[in-house]
Image (cartoon, rainbow, N blue to C red):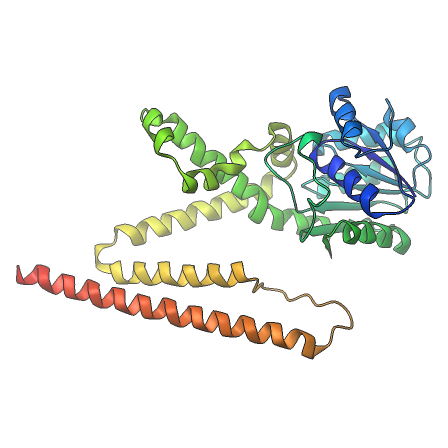
Length: 339
């Protein structure tokens, strides 16, 4: 199998490393506008061969991977449209999908090999130097087939995702963009806002010295590659704006409860309930269970049982702590009244 990877940054080089390590007989051709990135990918052995034009890279390719920032995908499609094989499978790794699918329909009308993709993995570090063969292990890999996509093309991209250690998840472009705006794009915007707020403060010299794990964890995504962040924002504006509005409402509600002196016990219950919800999420209790076809009920039963037992124990622990805390608050209030 001959794979052309157009864009040898973090994601493209990681795909190349994974395929070359795990797929016997694969041959990876790399192309990037940056000679430095291309040389680094070759040095990392993420590609077998480098070429200096996108058209040359795809000419004999069975699979074409567009691993570039979202707004670079349209001109790249224009560049390869006359060189790509009619039976080639074309995918991408962009963080938004509706615009990409629209471009593909315009530039490659009727092509049966268009199967868009979005591996839900990454790091704030970027470039081929940061690439990892195991980057996609345990991650979701969203697959968005074009209407004309053949079952064979979908199978090929699904198998690539599985080979790299990811779990494929099929959805349509609009659904994808709405969901990732909430769980990927909004966190990036929130991190930028939090960091910018602190950085703009006159107290920043002191704040930056005091900042520890909490601030670093919350603002990590402020270090996102600006090209990537800009392209995400420009191609998913409405969905991101929607979730920013909801986030603002949630913060305002949290603030209202915080300053409500008559509702301090309810505020504590909110903290306890959120702690429990987060524990369930962290443990892996998700909203939509996905079991492989043919998995026996008994195989899933033990895991479900253990998860249920753990969450029940966690619930009891949190509720007991909550009741103890509320009793303590009541006693402190009575003491204040006596004084």
